[in-house]
Amino acid sequence: MPYYLILLCMFLVPINILAKPLRIFVSVLPMQTFVQQIGGQYVDVRAMVRPGYNPHIYDPTPQQIGALAQARLYIKTGVPFENAWMHRIQAANPNMQILDVRAGIELRKMPSHDHENDHEDHHGHASNAHDENELDPHVWTSPLLVKHIANKIRETLTQLDPDHAQVYERNYTHFAKALTKLDQEIHALLDPLPNRKFMIFHPAWGYFAQAYNLIQIPIEREGKAPGPRRLANLIAQARRENVRVIFVQPQFDKRLAQQVAQAIGGHVISIDPLAADYIPNLRRVANQIVKALHR
Image 1 (cartoon, helix red, strand yellow):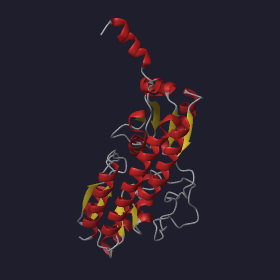
Image 2 (tube, helix red, strand yellow):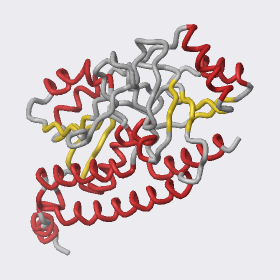
Image 3 (cartoon, one colour):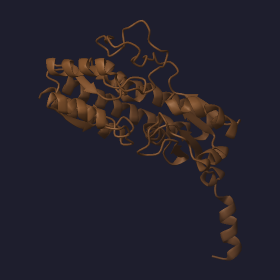
Image 4 (cartoon, helix red, strand yellow):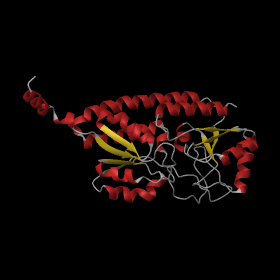
């Protein structure tokens, strides 16, 4: 083919094929997965909290802050590092749209650590009257809440890129069906359990517990280790209720959880609310809880 015809063909390529994908930043890896499921090839999505890092104390790198200048969208979940960094994230790109995926969700309060003799109701809510106003950001641990989040993502991508609205709608429909199936599978696993309580170091699974009528018993609260009195009460409770497994989040120090496990003759198992492989991960978590509660 003559050279001038090659050039002509290049100029005739539709603009939407040459267009760059939408640059999107999210707070944590599960959100990256959700955006990729819906946006597919039309999004370039990056998580601020890198694998293995703790979102409570994470500091974005200068390279991440610099890359925000090219972003069209930031998806916020309210994880603790955002409280300190959100104004700097917005200042890096004042034109960048912010989507808070918690909008429209009834948020839980994180369990309070102010009183040694507090207790929790059947959904894992702290029940003393002196709770701090810290809200639980881990909304993605409930598959049905993720359907709500995914729809918000679909709406926002459609607003930013209406040319691919049908693609986003189709991808959302497929993802929503997978989430419904996951929810049904987890119910089938967990509903028959007579024991509904599991002990966990950091209370990141409150929405999961609420969705499946479980009770999470947290060791750490508001980022603080328990005092001697509460630690003794937790050990006594674990012995009384035949708890043999302490769940931990891999981003946190395991030593205190191991101390409790040793005191009750149990052991520690890692479950990760920040895993990128969202659906397989929740299946693993549900099966690990089943095994732990059958001990």
